[in-house]
Length: 440
Image 1 (cartoon, rainbow, N blue to C red):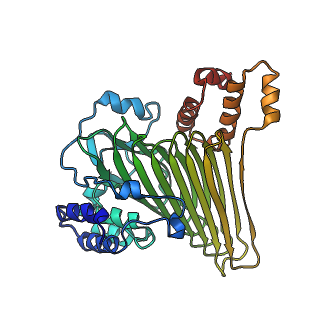
Image 2: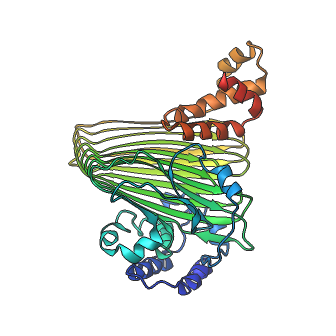
């Protein structure tokens, strides 16, 4: 046992939990105690060094309610979006700032801590069944500290028109802290909804977010899932999304990473029955010394399943990004279709990307493709814009925006699309001028 994990073991001993999940927590902690944090000698973590997280002593017990003014919350929530909203502040559910009303009949949207105390039967069937504690020590650590998070259950044939926004806010504390949000989403047959996960740092707080989301999609269920990561530049973010898809279900995933000092996003989709479809779009923008790692895996377990993946990165300064996308076509998964693409734009000579798209195919009647590109701005396009009396810096920003917009344009929810366009432009030189061009 290393001193890196002793802090977590000590905090676990202070957890006041007597619910039915206690044994699962202890089992997950034992696994974390045995494995410790991952290191760069492990293939899955070869390009991401988590020692900045492991060596820091984060407090995992938050017994004090952190105060955030309504103005601060309103400044970052989707004020123009009519949505159901759960707000968490430094990992603790805030009834005051949440908006849960007018739910369709039999739909459940609540804090996971409350669900653990009341809904044992269904949670026992689903909670911690899709996120494997053995694959990532961070998942095991999250499972050990499961308390607050979101439990969503959409019954058969129910369509929720209003999006559900899960807003995780973090602000400065007297000492560094860790939060372990856990979200469980269960979609019945023919159920439909849109879910947004927003992780936002209100200031330059020093903290660690270790989030896990589990999703179960029943037959013909449709889910649009958005994850927007805007953590503090002094924050660490480890996120894990695990999806089990049944017959003719569809998941549309949009992952946007704009903040954080060290960030890792893992997505694992299991297409467990015929007709299941997963669409994954991702955008990451890095600057200074940021490090962002995206790992995806799709398992085609049955015939006639479909997956497509498009991730784009814009890197500047001394930043570094990692993309590892893996598609596994299992022997019985004939007549599947899987496509994967990763494109990266380097704006600085000191920026670095490690990209590795992978295909493992054990069936012989499939359509699969994968590819990766790394490059700089097109000089011909720069020349064209300069010839139209646009200065070089503005021309570079326009081309960068167009590159990123290939992902943003696939977002169908106008309020999210507009917010992301604004955030992306805000990271470019001459932001005000770029907004004039893009709004014309």
